[in-house]
Amino acid sequence: MISQENIKLVLEEVANRHRLTPIRKVEGGDQGNTLYLFEDNEESKLVVKFGNDKEVGDNVKGYEALRKIGLEDMLPQPLIFEEIEGVPLIIMEYVGVDFRNRVSEEQEPVKLYSSLVNLMDPLYTQSLTGNGQESRLFLEARKEKLIGYSKLFGDVFSTDQLEMVEGVRIPENLNESCFAVFDFTPDNVFIKDGKIRYIDPKDEVLGNPILELAAFAGVSRDRYLLAGSVEGHEIIRDYALNELADKLKMESQDAELVWNLGRATQCLLSARFHSEPSGRKKFAVDSMEYMEMLQ
Image (tube, rainbow, N blue to C red):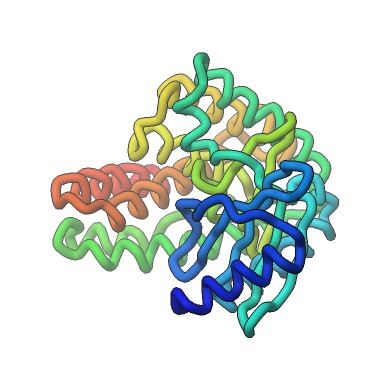
């Protein structure tokens, strides 16, 4: 954790070095990170992120991984890495508010969900690898997470149910992989100038995106209760189980299996981080219903 004194020193040095004017602290970011909004001489807005060695280091690896698969357009521009007073930091383009907040500002919010899938579609095509190895590793890792998370709910799940989680299936035939990350959420996705911007990548950026879209649609509708999310959930689901499944050369039942794995994972995460006992139990029960479809 950076002291307030160090924060002040870093902000002053960033402003002097790059001729920027600080505007305000930005809400958001992972624990241990600090985000500040600046403005340059041309009134363009920039964000400075600093405060956590591992997080900044993981982002640097993630940016490079996205470049390697041809998705540099997803990155904010400019993108500068520096260290000031021993603090690693990233200076990047301000890409506006995230999807979660953006959708609440839209007069026709449902259109934003359509824009999301329309803008993601060519990115999925561009990043296809020609094999399913990354998809398998991605889904197996998520299954292991699901097993681990379920053990936190021994007060909700029976012993038989916990044993059942071990038997969750993933598809046998996986022939394609493309851009996919575990934290593709309404809090991390931005749309600016007709492009998807993803500012918080880690070094793993390939897998099976049907899972991440299921989690995105589910948390938008069931946890965040976002504007337009009922219709938006169906827009995303229809795209994932049809066009995207075809792109990934998946049979419909296998695509449905991955979708249910994504929904099970999202429900269990929503339960894990829910502050109300009733909400915690509801999402845990919902998760188990999806896991029963995965046997």
